[in-house]
Amino acid sequence: MLALAGAAEDPGPQFLREVAARSSEFKAARDHYTYRQTVQFIELDPRGQEVGSYREVRDIIFSPQKQRTEVLVRRPFENLKNLKLTEEDFRDVREVNPFVLTREELPYYQVKFQGSEPMDEIDCFVFRLAPRQTLEGQRLFEGLIWVSAKDRQVVRTEGRPVPQIYRTKGENLFPHFTTIYRPIDGKYWFPVRTLADDTLYFRSGPQKVRLIIRYDDYKRFS
Image (cartoon, rainbow, N blue to C red; front, side, top):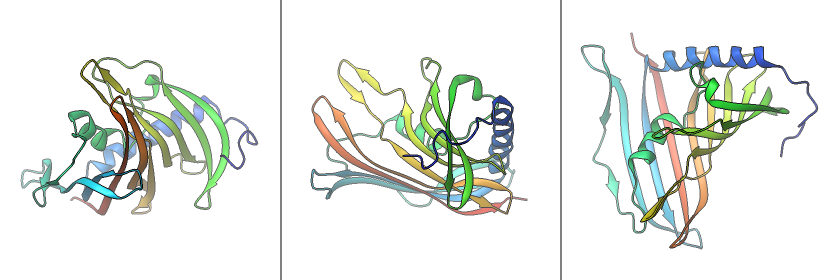
């Protein structure tokens, strides 16, 4: 629940355009940083005990030819019992969990002002995002974003990747997550943690899951 929902005046469309411009800068800047990404996807029983998991560690680095690439630090560990990770799951790890609202992506969303709320002692405006539509093959975000009133940058997101995928032979469902951002080098707010603890309701029955993504050791490449 938002502590001050509705108490602040809507900052208006110009503010959103400034947010999108800053997010576009952020996205371009992050492409010039190396960092380590650790992903853990955990199956839980009804009591919350781990029954299976997938774990991987990747370094996002630059080759001698200055091309950005991903390198597995060690072979992924997997002993999932009930679920299978899909192409969409890994795409969400790359594109949706570390969400940014860029100039290119802003037209995809309906954005509604929700109010204001301090987040980690930072004055923030809160917006609810929902896709206007989802085209075949698109992966988008639906939920809330907290934006620093001063820096015009996203400092927290809460929501889920969409669309959920329903097929005749099965479903591909995605958990509600929270991503926390922190200032790096005193300029850009980069994602540092993504956390999800949710129950996915498959036709075969509910499955509790936990997702943890860590983004560590950001260093600007030069």
